[in-house]
Length: 72
Image 1 (cartoon, one colour):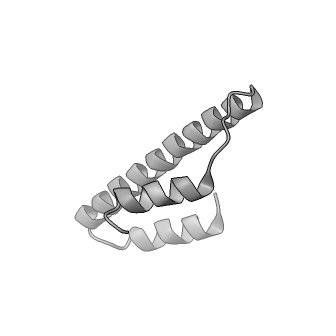
Image 2 (cartoon, one colour):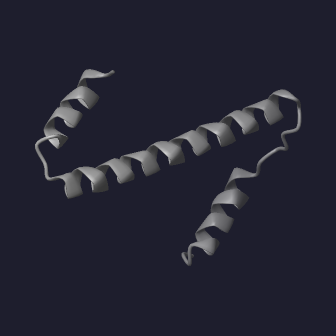
């Protein structure tokens, strides 16, 4: 285990059980989000490796993202 994680767990053990449980749930949720993101990245990389990618108009993409976020 990474030393930083070991230190964090050591510090957590001094907290009340309720706090430990809450932090543990948040950590597990974060790890699951990272796992799903890694799976999506791997899926995209396989798709690109298989030649399934399409050219991206970066300026158009940025414009659409700004419009979608309510910015102009």
